[in-house]
Length: 337
Ligand code: CUA
Image 1 (cartoon, rainbow, N blue to C red):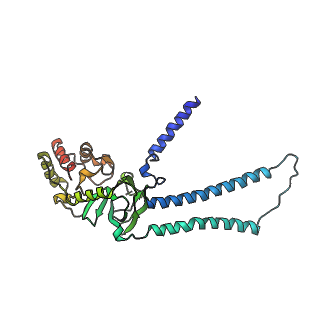
Image 2: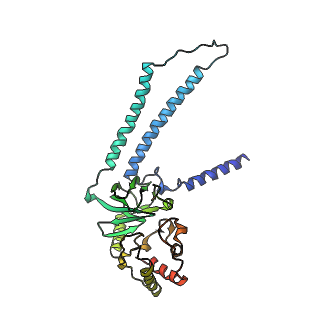
Image 3: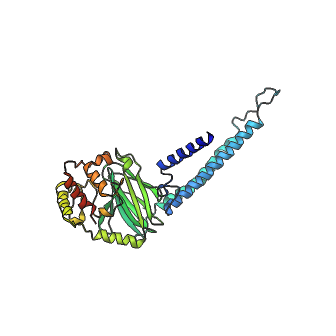
């Protein structure tokens, strides 16, 4: 019986850690993957040590007082010595917390300034980030292209993210790499991050921005410098031409239905007043809309009813398309390189 209870508790705990993301290395502040995350982790450790010391000292004093001065049988009832207004005690419990705050404050302030330093242009790269309800645009000014919901960066290089918002306030957070930073309409904010090793690091919007907020996910894809260069070169020379008849039909459907909101720079489709993600190089992305796997089935599901996948987003349902048309559009879009 007891054992069953234990097993149940273990299952429950592992379930909790699964849904809270505790088991995922790539979305944890406690498992930093770059110098910014490391220095923030150092601050977490320092404050944890100080707070633990305070808890221990207070607990020991409390237990000592309770045991030492408890009422004993037969003891005469008398009011103990009053210490109200004791200069010694007042000074002691004013100075100790001030000292602790100074010990915590100095490294915190100096780390904040250090992390906010503008990196040398020669040793860093720049990515412009724009938040939209509910997706992310990542523009590479040095390379002249834009992508969405997945930002590729090379390992070991400082990346300066320059951020703003198209509509409401969003916030950019990649727990493993450090952060976070608000994206406010009409304002420019910046955040410098660096990743040590290649990998996929999960990012989240952490400012309640509307119905789709909880699904406004993105990924930081960290690559070896040579792999990153290869990705850049592919996107600099995109191939957005259909390679079969079905896809060619899809391209026509795209021009009729989608280009009011979505650009495919590689195919010469540009939009003014952009409302949807750039789709050039869609086939390289690991996920669609930051939430579902990048497969033809999910793309087709998205086109038919995007609200089911990400409630509140601005894309209308294209359920008037016939099965054949949907297949053609999916064929074209999923082949974009
Ligand atoms: Cu964007 Cu929350």
